[in-house]
Length: 197
Image (cartoon, rainbow, N blue to C red; front, side, top):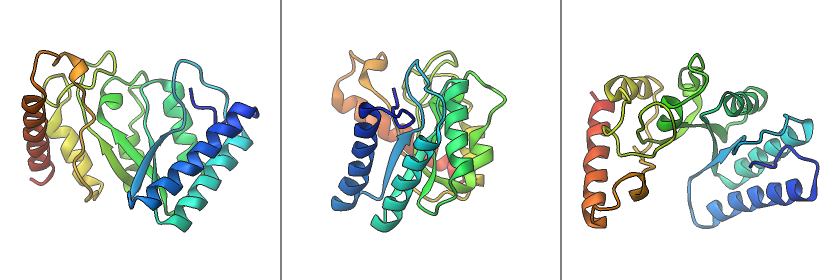
């Protein structure tokens, strides 16, 4: 669960951890970090305190030269919370991370965060599923329409890396790690080719 929104000791600790993540990224020259505006089954209501915490993270990111990308989630409440943060905070270092698996399995199909916030796209989490849940399959092993998806990403003007968020635990347990990595690399190359057509 994301505790940014809660006026509790746990909420404060979670926020301080977020600030430290920005520091860590700067220290290790990591150009961007991805953050969830909401996570898990419970969704505490949006609060001014939570929004102020996100603003402080965006300010720290600006001073540190680190991009902070708010990720789209699967649930309608998760989508609403990410949308709220991106609508309320217009900061040069606070942008959008597009998660293709969350988009394909989203519970609010009318919401297209890539179309809405693509101009602020800073990071990609690309993976596949069968449209019902977040599976983290290799691209082309689920139901995502990759040619259409990659054209939509290309339209945003995003020039960053094509990154996958896949796992062996998604049904590839009998595949040797080296083979899985080769497959993932080959799929990423295919996505890159689709994006650059």
